[in-house]
Amino acid sequence: MASEILRLEKVCKAYNVGLPAETEVLHGIDLELDHGEFLALMGPSGSGKSTLLNIVGLLDRPTSGRLVIKGQDTAAMGDGEITHLRGHTIGFVFQYHLLISAFTARENVMMPMLVDRGFPSAEIEARANRLLAQVGLEKFAGNLANNMSGGQQQRVAVARALAMNPDLVLADEPTGNLDSKSADAVFELMRQVNRDSGTSFLLVTHNMELARRCDRIIEVVDGRIQA
Amino acid sequence: MNRWLPFEWITAVRFLREGRLQTIFIIGGISIGVAVIVFMSAMLAGLQANFVKRVLTSQPQIQLLAPDQVARPLRNAKGEIEDPIVQRPSQRVISIDQWPKIRSQMQAMPEVVTVSPTILGSVLVVRGDASRSVTLSGVEPDSYFRIVKVPDYIVAGEARLTSEDIIIGIELAKDLGATVGDKLNVRAASGATRVLTISGLVDLGNKGVNQRASYAALRTAQSLLGMIGGVTTIDMTVTDIYAAEDIAQRIQAANAVEADSWIKTNAQFFTAVKAQQTTNTLIRLFVGLSVAFGIAAVLIVSVIQRSKDIGILRAMGTSRGQILRVFLVQGGLLGFIGSLFGAAMGAFALVYWHAVARQADGTELFPLILERSLFLYTALLATITGLLAAMAPAVRAAKLDPVVAIRG
Image (cartoon, rainbow over all chains, first blue to last red; front, side):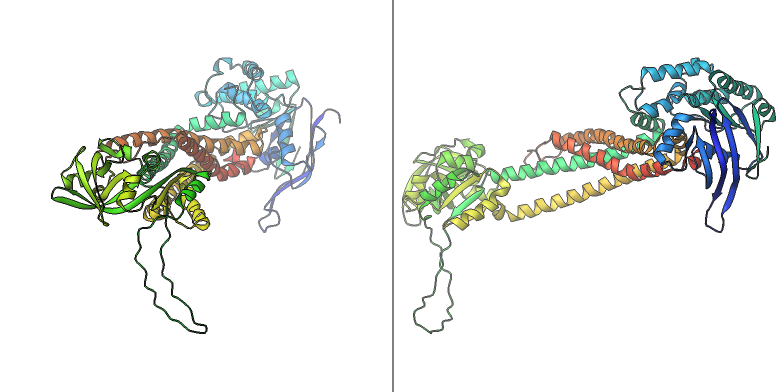
């Protein structure tokens, strides 16, 4: 499919493979995500949502099954290729420990570009400033991460996730730690980016109200997709 | 962000800056270690240089002597079995055979700097009722004073040796109640007598030597000791003082002379130097190890503290190699910055100790040698130690599973 960004085919994930304590947490997951799609992933705690997100984000590898990102099968890729694909294709927004505390908001946004290019440049800095303006935080660009509120930090994290102009943003309960007003603002921000740039989003959330505002909802229960 | 610094350096510096207290304490630890190494090394080098200078400016680096005279039993009869007990003969003061030829050969050697023929013998110096038995060195001042720096040790008068002059040790002058310009009656065992004028008094730094030392012109001494045209030793200096023993052995193998180097004649001094060097090396090793363990411990804690940051960096596409370098740079930087402070502390301690520690006579205990190479070498060593110490934490950081790291 031409518009497909992500495809999982019968993806299983087990821990302690070959040991008596072997536990399978994902059982044959099939999932597709199209370009520009905003997908909500729901499910109770321990259902395997985070594991699925880690596999999709190339932070973890499936025990079996296929993971295809932008038409590339990731099974045969080495660590270097995986790291490169992750850096150029996927952006992350985490629930906890949102930013690197040693850097300012601007530097946090610059970081993915700095990792990719090796050296800072005016171009990287200008893009970071544009992204911060996009999330409404241009005035806080010089603030250290710890000197900002949770909502502000999360908006910086969204800006950082967009730094490399990724095809897919994975957000693991990005609003879970925020008050309802901030949560709404962060969600709207992501939705806006999704509409404007066509970036796909895979959002893990417990918030049904936010999930309803996504294009599609899938639920993971006991390591299986329910709907 | 500094545009000239790569990602790894920027991140390393920021991590060190953020963990300020930790960084300050470990840099303090490294600085103390480096200061100890700089202080000990420079002081030891100074003490050694002082010893070497004292030893080498008051004696030749190589001395050629006539070979020992040995008695040999006569063997005449065929089939006769002898079991002789050979008594060692008394050693007459004799001249080195064909010494001008040997001197020319020595002068032709590229590793030899100065060659000076000398005659040594015992004489009696008499002044009024006082008389003392002394060693008379008959020397050619031009060449000999380049080997033994007699002019440097002159405390009264001048280092002048015409055929009528004599230079004597300061203690001998006291014993004889003589001073510069006084005349001494010098008598050899053969009965030959000369009246010589004291041109200078020397202090060679040792009371015993100052009681026995006396210098006269070569020809004066030759006539007194009854050895016209002869010399008992040929004194030499060489380009590399530590090669003196090798050179001496080669000379002895190729000529009919006995060659003694300053290394052989000062074996005790060398044993002391070696013991000092071994102690210093051990101290350096253990200080280096404790510095390395300190850096490693701090960085291992840092890896644990920063595991979430490492996870986030990995998630945004940072390679294992980049993470490895971030922590290696931290180790190297800690070592380097610690070495700068440590070198400054060591230099300060040296200057202070140099000013405070004095010998009994008030002269400096050791010369202040602050060589740039010592600081460069120490900085390099500390940086390498930092890099090596950071290796284990850096590998651990690079191997962190990003999923586990982010979860913390």
